[in-house]
Length: 296
Image 1 (spheres, rainbow, N blue to C red):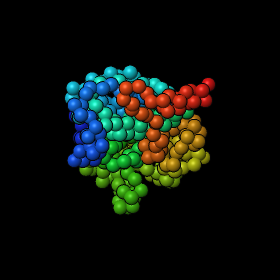
Image 2 (cartoon, one colour; image 1 turned 30 degrees about the vertical axis):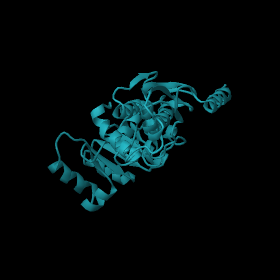
Image 3 (cartoon, rainbow, N blue to C red; image 1 turned 60 degrees about the vertical axis):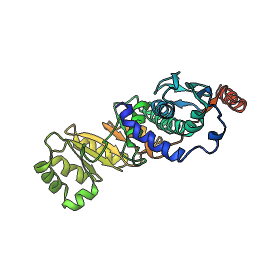
Image 4 (cartoon, rainbow, N blue to C red; image 1 turned 120 degrees about the horizontal axis):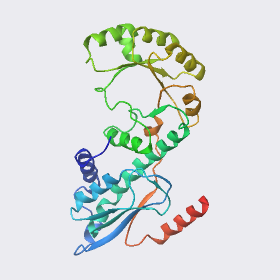
């Protein structure tokens, strides 16, 4: 997937409404004639950058005449001192947009950075790593974009674009068989059907119904391997449930087709990003030097 301004504009507008409210009670009194200034957004941490278009749109919403130069692109690795964007705009613009612009990049880069670690861990296997719908409501689109930037894939975007039969569906329907029969009789013919299976008996029942995707939900490695033998190529297979950086490699090495990982989006450590008008401030320069020396 790709982002465009039509998709992100409402998110940026909402963020700016929250940030600006009725006005900037600090910077608004300091700018005088509001002279044009220069600034840079730069990294103080190490990771995969993401979210530059949202920062760009944040700036343009406040100052349509602002000039923005990209020094990197989404998906690029960055380290302490890497300049991401160079900006020329009215002084008041920087006071208004600083926090929002940085927050978009920090959080989305955090997702992309974590995702890249997961993808690298299993690149020796055939598995496809995907996200889940876990995260902040209303921001799923940009979180899933950050996952793609980090090198993984997307699972479903909403309830509308996949038939995914989970435990509560099965309870309401009475059985996997009842659920699948009802769905095949009523659902759009272009959809594949995926069933969440917690036991090998559930795998056997789902296979008997001819479903296209079997999800091994919170199974241990031995159960998963047994499930793969039962499937024997008759359906695509997915592992899900509590997967982390310590467990993903042995799961990938079972030969499962897909691993869905909620951790990509529900537990994020933001990448440290800053904005300085004119030159990078001395304290940041000291921090950057220390981090570079520690990395040697």
